[in-house]
Image (cartoon, rainbow, N blue to C red; front, top):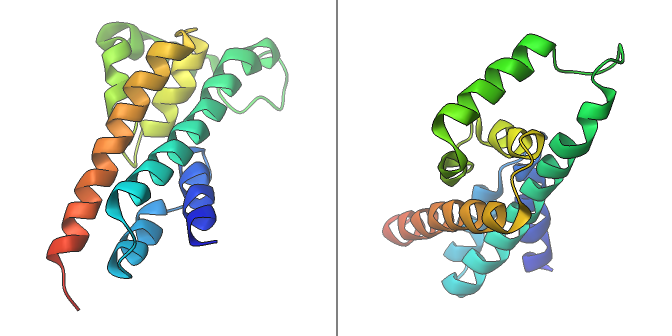
Length: 141
């Protein structure tokens, strides 16, 4: 059950919803759960959550002329220019709390292929969880 909660929190944290999977990972690590399994579950959930943003970016642009569409044309153009400037490698920073979710959305808008997307996003998010695991090992209560 703990791993399912970690997966769900990690999944939701990668979407535009305000969720914090690091807290779950930290708590489970302090309970003595195997670190490699925690990192694997959190990375998988967070990466799959980022795929939701990618899909939204890829298919929601069909609705950009609707009144209810959230992003303005100027915002989309600015984000696309930024992504074109820094390229696909910027997806390594999709773990960032500010802008990371937008990167995965813009990757969908820019029609980045799914395999490179998964590799880069998964790698970046996995490194973040490894760092959190390392921090949890060095903190004692």
